[in-house]
Length: 329
Image 1 (tube, rainbow, N blue to C red):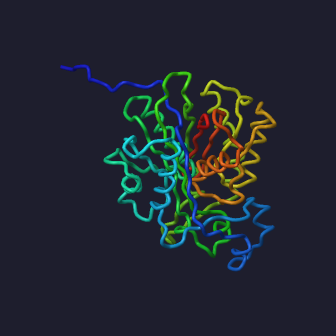
Image 2 (tube, one colour):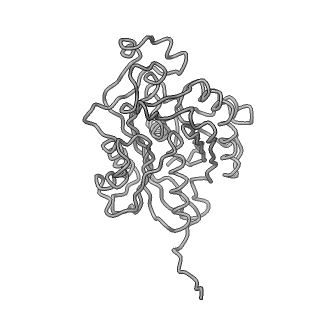
Image 3 (cartoon, rainbow, N blue to C red):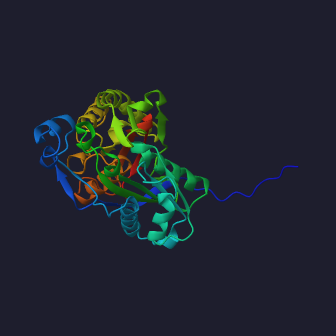
């Protein structure tokens, strides 16, 4: 005999209530790296667009960074830990797989007994987590979700490998996601996501070295041709057109990739005055943290304003990709 289950009340959708971020204090410039590997400032700027990056000191953990970013997002949202029932940490750089970062982070920021789990979609992780949080709220499974992208990539980098040590960095970014009061208040569009598992070996932690390896040219070719269509699909799913997008915040992988994606979107109708995140210049590639970091920095600089349509698109190891349109809180 089957019976009808009692389901929680659903919501019309979700919106971002607040954002926050954290970066280590230590700045590593291109000239600093040139003291160790065969490179120079011009070579790095021309290839990836990075001038400097932030690297965590040994005593600063991934959970430390996630907790600080999460606390700042809660403050920005005007909420406390008691208002949150779910914590998701997108990360691919925890030093150990157990325990997860989410439960530890929740405890640090005063969230009692939440649902807590980590999500690994590498550089697409924040967009995956944001989509998951939005759907949890829409289904009535959660009320307020703290979503954090946090990485300590410096633990996994071979600092004598010029192809990777110039790119990656550390940091965390967070968003508090809550229910929209009505359909007109929905502020997170449907997620457009997917993967290309046949290219999984292009970015990987190699077991023999326990260090990050990347086929830079293969990833560059894939990203510059495949990511703009994902972004356009996210716009379509949200019921918008490219001309409706005020700000583009792609994963900060490489400034040349960012510029290529923006160019393709403009060719499809995005406005010339669409602002494009370029946080990679001073933050480097922080994987799942890069999108919320860039968004928070742009808001602090006045380059994105409350109520504007922001197109997020993440892509990276897996290879995994995801994007959605959000309204800036």
